[in-house]
Length: 190
Image: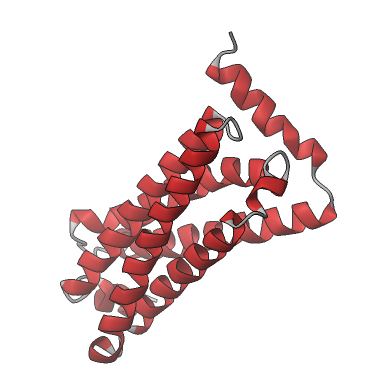
Protein backbone atom coordinates (compact mmCIF):
# COMPACT_ATOMS: atom_id res chain seq x y z
CA UNK A 1 0.00 0.00 0.00
CA UNK A 2 1.32 3.40 -1.00
CA UNK A 3 1.51 6.27 1.47
CA UNK A 4 0.03 9.67 0.81
CA UNK A 5 3.57 11.09 0.82
CA UNK A 6 4.73 8.66 -1.87
CA UNK A 7 1.60 9.43 -3.92
CA UNK A 8 2.36 13.16 -3.59
CA UNK A 9 5.98 12.70 -4.67
CA UNK A 10 4.81 10.70 -7.70
CA UNK A 11 2.18 13.33 -8.53
CA UNK A 12 4.67 16.21 -8.35
CA UNK A 13 7.34 14.29 -10.27
CA UNK A 14 5.07 14.40 -13.32
CA UNK A 15 6.33 17.93 -14.02
CA UNK A 16 9.14 16.12 -15.83
CA UNK A 17 6.53 15.22 -18.46
CA UNK A 18 5.63 18.87 -19.14
CA UNK A 19 6.15 20.11 -22.67
CA UNK A 20 6.70 23.83 -23.39
CA UNK A 21 2.96 24.48 -23.75
CA UNK A 22 2.31 22.79 -20.40
CA UNK A 23 4.99 24.94 -18.75
CA UNK A 24 3.59 28.11 -20.29
CA UNK A 25 0.06 27.24 -19.13
CA UNK A 26 1.27 26.26 -15.65
CA UNK A 27 3.36 29.41 -15.18
CA UNK A 28 0.60 31.67 -16.54
CA UNK A 29 -2.10 30.18 -14.30
CA UNK A 30 -0.11 29.80 -11.08
CA UNK A 31 1.66 33.10 -11.78
CA UNK A 32 -1.64 34.94 -12.23
CA UNK A 33 -2.90 33.64 -8.90
CA UNK A 34 0.44 34.46 -7.22
CA UNK A 35 -0.10 37.99 -8.53
CA UNK A 36 -3.50 38.07 -6.84
CA UNK A 37 -1.92 36.87 -3.60
CA UNK A 38 0.86 39.47 -3.68
CA UNK A 39 -1.55 42.27 -4.62
CA UNK A 40 -4.12 41.53 -1.93
CA UNK A 41 -1.58 40.50 0.69
CA UNK A 42 0.74 43.39 -0.14
CA UNK A 43 -2.08 45.91 0.02
CA UNK A 44 -3.33 44.71 3.41
CA UNK A 45 0.20 44.37 4.79
CA UNK A 46 1.15 47.87 3.54
CA UNK A 47 -1.88 49.36 5.23
CA UNK A 48 -1.25 47.43 8.43
CA UNK A 49 2.41 48.52 8.53
CA UNK A 50 1.25 52.13 8.19
CA UNK A 51 -1.21 51.99 11.06
CA UNK A 52 -4.40 51.05 9.24
CA UNK A 53 -6.66 48.89 11.38
CA UNK A 54 -8.43 46.41 9.08
CA UNK A 55 -11.20 44.16 10.39
CA UNK A 56 -9.63 40.79 11.22
CA UNK A 57 -11.55 38.95 8.48
CA UNK A 58 -9.78 41.03 5.78
CA UNK A 59 -6.64 38.96 6.34
CA UNK A 60 -8.62 35.97 5.06
CA UNK A 61 -8.49 37.45 1.55
CA UNK A 62 -4.72 36.90 1.12
CA UNK A 63 -4.76 33.78 3.35
CA UNK A 64 -7.48 32.19 1.22
CA UNK A 65 -5.63 33.20 -1.94
CA UNK A 66 -2.43 31.63 -0.58
CA UNK A 67 -4.24 28.35 0.11
CA UNK A 68 -5.76 28.49 -3.37
CA UNK A 69 -2.37 29.10 -5.03
CA UNK A 70 -0.74 26.20 -3.18
CA UNK A 71 -3.57 23.86 -4.14
CA UNK A 72 -3.63 24.81 -7.83
CA UNK A 73 0.16 24.45 -7.98
CA UNK A 74 -0.41 20.75 -7.25
CA UNK A 75 -3.67 20.26 -9.12
CA UNK A 76 -2.43 21.77 -12.36
CA UNK A 77 0.40 19.24 -12.55
CA UNK A 78 -2.12 16.42 -12.86
CA UNK A 79 -4.28 18.42 -15.24
CA UNK A 80 -1.33 19.00 -17.58
CA UNK A 81 -0.15 15.35 -17.48
CA UNK A 82 -1.94 12.21 -16.36
CA UNK A 83 -5.49 13.64 -16.46
CA UNK A 84 -5.05 15.77 -19.58
CA UNK A 85 -7.07 13.49 -21.87
CA UNK A 86 -9.78 12.90 -19.29
CA UNK A 87 -10.30 16.65 -18.87
CA UNK A 88 -10.87 17.06 -22.61
CA UNK A 89 -14.16 15.18 -22.20
CA UNK A 90 -15.79 18.32 -20.81
CA UNK A 91 -14.23 19.03 -17.46
CA UNK A 92 -11.77 21.51 -18.99
CA UNK A 93 -14.73 23.64 -20.14
CA UNK A 94 -16.07 23.69 -16.58
CA UNK A 95 -12.61 24.79 -15.40
CA UNK A 96 -12.52 27.62 -17.93
CA UNK A 97 -15.99 28.83 -16.96
CA UNK A 98 -15.09 28.66 -13.25
CA UNK A 99 -11.83 30.54 -13.82
CA UNK A 100 -13.59 33.20 -15.92
CA UNK A 101 -16.27 33.70 -13.25
CA UNK A 102 -13.68 33.78 -10.44
CA UNK A 103 -11.35 36.28 -12.10
CA UNK A 104 -14.26 38.44 -13.21
CA UNK A 105 -15.68 38.47 -9.67
CA UNK A 106 -12.36 39.77 -8.31
CA UNK A 107 -12.13 42.46 -10.99
CA UNK A 108 -15.73 43.54 -10.35
CA UNK A 109 -15.09 43.73 -6.60
CA UNK A 110 -12.13 46.02 -7.33
CA UNK A 111 -14.24 48.19 -9.64
CA UNK A 112 -16.95 48.28 -6.97
CA UNK A 113 -14.64 50.38 -4.80
CA UNK A 114 -15.39 53.45 -6.88
CA UNK A 115 -18.71 52.39 -8.48
CA UNK A 116 -20.40 50.49 -5.68
CA UNK A 117 -24.00 50.58 -6.88
CA UNK A 118 -23.23 49.70 -10.48
CA UNK A 119 -20.89 46.75 -9.79
CA UNK A 120 -22.56 45.28 -6.68
CA UNK A 121 -24.98 42.94 -8.47
CA UNK A 122 -22.61 41.90 -11.29
CA UNK A 123 -19.94 41.07 -8.69
CA UNK A 124 -22.39 38.98 -6.69
CA UNK A 125 -23.58 37.18 -9.82
CA UNK A 126 -20.02 36.24 -10.77
CA UNK A 127 -19.22 35.13 -7.20
CA UNK A 128 -22.28 32.88 -7.15
CA UNK A 129 -21.42 31.49 -10.59
CA UNK A 130 -17.81 30.82 -9.60
CA UNK A 131 -19.02 28.86 -6.57
CA UNK A 132 -21.74 27.07 -8.58
CA UNK A 133 -19.28 25.94 -11.25
CA UNK A 134 -16.76 24.96 -8.57
CA UNK A 135 -19.41 22.60 -7.17
CA UNK A 136 -20.02 21.17 -10.66
CA UNK A 137 -16.26 20.70 -11.02
CA UNK A 138 -16.10 18.86 -7.70
CA UNK A 139 -18.91 16.55 -8.80
CA UNK A 140 -16.99 15.75 -11.99
CA UNK A 141 -13.82 15.09 -10.00
CA UNK A 142 -15.65 12.76 -7.64
CA UNK A 143 -17.13 10.88 -10.59
CA UNK A 144 -13.62 10.47 -12.04
CA UNK A 145 -12.22 9.45 -8.66
CA UNK A 146 -14.92 6.83 -8.07
CA UNK A 147 -14.32 5.42 -11.57
CA UNK A 148 -10.56 5.17 -10.98
CA UNK A 149 -9.56 8.13 -13.19
CA UNK A 150 -8.25 10.35 -10.39
CA UNK A 151 -6.22 9.96 -7.22
CA UNK A 152 -6.29 11.20 -3.67
CA UNK A 153 -3.63 13.88 -4.25
CA UNK A 154 -5.83 15.50 -6.88
CA UNK A 155 -8.89 15.17 -4.64
CA UNK A 156 -7.15 16.78 -1.67
CA UNK A 157 -5.83 19.57 -3.88
CA UNK A 158 -9.41 20.22 -5.00
CA UNK A 159 -10.57 20.32 -1.40
CA UNK A 160 -8.01 23.04 -0.68
CA UNK A 161 -8.84 24.88 -3.92
CA UNK A 162 -12.43 25.05 -2.72
CA UNK A 163 -11.42 26.09 0.82
CA UNK A 164 -9.06 28.79 -0.44
CA UNK A 165 -11.49 30.16 -2.99
CA UNK A 166 -14.41 30.34 -0.55
CA UNK A 167 -12.30 31.85 2.22
CA UNK A 168 -10.90 34.49 -0.13
CA UNK A 169 -14.03 35.47 -2.05
CA UNK A 170 -16.51 35.42 0.85
CA UNK A 171 -14.14 37.49 2.99
CA UNK A 172 -13.69 39.89 0.10
CA UNK A 173 -17.48 40.15 -0.32
CA UNK A 174 -17.86 40.89 3.40
CA UNK A 175 -15.20 43.58 3.08
CA UNK A 176 -17.09 45.12 0.16
CA UNK A 177 -20.43 44.89 1.98
CA UNK A 178 -19.01 46.82 4.95
CA UNK A 179 -17.74 49.58 2.65
CA UNK A 180 -14.12 48.41 2.37
CA UNK A 181 -12.96 49.56 5.81
CA UNK A 182 -9.29 50.47 5.75
CA UNK A 183 -9.00 50.84 1.97
CA UNK A 184 -9.21 54.64 1.81
CA UNK A 185 -6.69 54.97 4.64
CA UNK A 186 -4.30 52.54 2.92
CA UNK A 187 -4.58 54.35 -0.42
CA UNK A 188 -3.56 57.56 1.34
CA UNK A 189 -0.34 55.84 2.51
CA UNK A 190 0.94 55.26 -1.03
